[in-house]
Length: 228
Image (cartoon, rainbow, N blue to C red; front, side, top):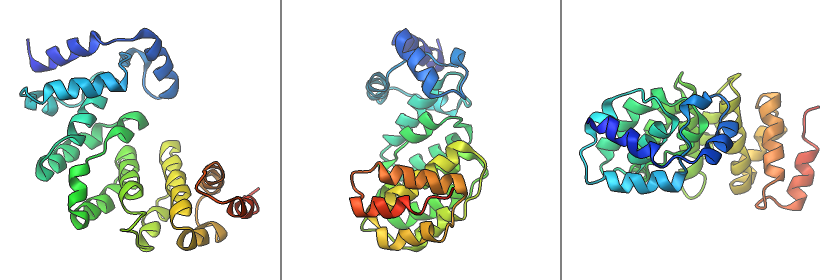
């Protein structure tokens, strides 16, 4: 039995039919037949079990067939301790990511140890023609560069991304709503000047208004900036 067959069998043994039905509704762009129905805690537990095994062949066998195989792959990359290995793994894997759930579970904390190098990679990912590579880059910028590492020019990196793709525009809105919560003074101009597409602009305002980190006064001001 190959390592790929072994991992698939282990995933199948963790199948939860009710969770499969639930997950298929959350990720409508993935065919239900390609969803096993494995909960994320079970995937994280499996990743820990695989650390003592040689899974190099499995990591290189792309694309995987099932959603959970891809999600597990993303978790494995997130837990890598070597920056070089992690970056190499991302370069190989990101072009095959085809849904928001797999994309958003990837969080390679080891790369954040070198913020300058990480930022260079993020800029490249954001500009990618691959939908979920660009989404991933924006999410990493949101996760690691809106606090003490923040620079106002980072907002422009995302503002210039133009797309008709729902899952990319949703991430852009999420990014700017988070930026409003953390860096209001630098960010509000992008909303006042209507720098984003109409849908993304209004979605940003919606998500910001839903945030507990935005004051009541700020929320009221944002309501007046909606594009009708």
